Length: 606
Image 1 (cartoon, one colour):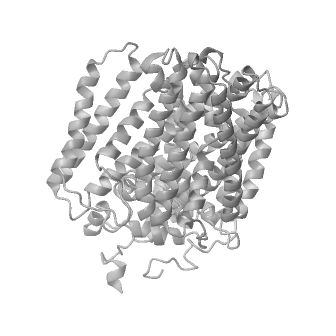
Image 2: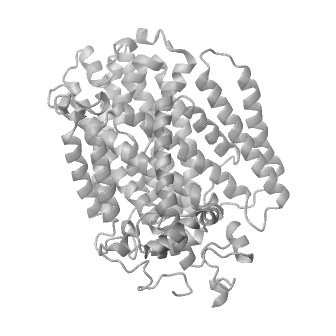
Image 3: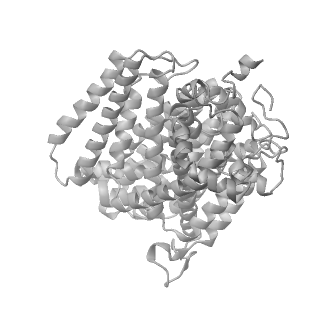
């Protein structure tokens, strides 16, 4: 292995090309024999502590980890591509499917405020993502950011939920695609599904069309990122035209009497809707995974992410207002709200325009999701937490073909069986969990740098972060379990959050300034992002948390039996697991991949 950190062709990390043997899935020393594997299992506690305490470096993610894919991704995206990727990723089934159900049964016309709340939460997360994406422009997105700031294990747990988010999100959109296609063909939404009465209700409607749609998207995603971008912004432009039509035509049929009862379900209904409608904003994080393929990340990523989210939030608010002005909220259809609303005001022909627009939107959501999820999976596989076969980049297309196909096969299977409501609730939990971790990581990035931050400042930072998390969880828990509008607990929890955030701002100097583009109002903005994300988690039903817990247990089982040992061996091969003085540097994030067995950095060895 060379001293520059670029892996040689015979090292087992970059040599795979298009092969598909055992060494492409379990090439690490721990899996060479049963004896090695048993020994690895015996060392699990020590290995686990090693990976928990190990933090990566910006340079490691940018160079050494990226080099493990053998071929480079092509840098051919601009801010224009990213804006349309952002719009295409976000505006899909959420607004056309979930709005009707929430307006009718949960929040009434105040659903517009629900979109505002979830939009603010999403925008705060966008800011946090943007600073990381500018400084660490790699395909790993939040997985790479968390490896750098919170360590390997936290990054893995987040990565598992990222993958769950994409699979479930793609499945939910694919099933919605079938419903709107049926509407466009003048059929009921269930006419194109196969009902199997012997199966449980939530899994009895089989959707073969969703599987076909996912397969077509897979072909587009593996051929070319730039080609996917062109298809996406052409389809997104058509989609925006349809949205403008819905807004303008809807306002011509507006009746202000329908707003006479604005919030029939009270404040609680507004926030309950916000937690579910956050699903409508899911997808922008896929844009951050394209940073590795962006020509000028420092300029293009902030414009692309913030610009697309601002446009999306405005569109959602206007669409929800129009819907509730066209029909009284109890009469809004929960399955096809806009189509039925236009029928109710005498514009039956408009439902076909709405259905066509929804199909366009959902197609682009699936495409951008496929592009994003494959890049997440690629970067995770580069660390060997997942089989390195998934990290291969095709030399001609410059795309991660293996990762794309695997993720979309999983998406197609889930879409074939599972009901939309189950998918939407579970998706919101995974997304909110990841976003709060990224916000937490941003505060750590700004206020803690090994060797510069004093012990006293580090203790104050940890204490304040615990208080921010604790007060936010207490607020969300009380909100979730209380059935009345008692505000006593909030008088205690919210000042604790405020004082803890102020403690970071006043008593701890920022140890790292952003080099190019930074989030404003740190630590207030990321701290508020943490609080809102946790608060919205408190509005999600208990059954969804049970499913979330089951998935986390599955992640831990895989990690302790495979992922931990594979990533440990890979780190050991690269000199990352140094003990003694070197270990101290690894723990503090000073030298994760450049410490050799002699304790001398590779740069010094030159």
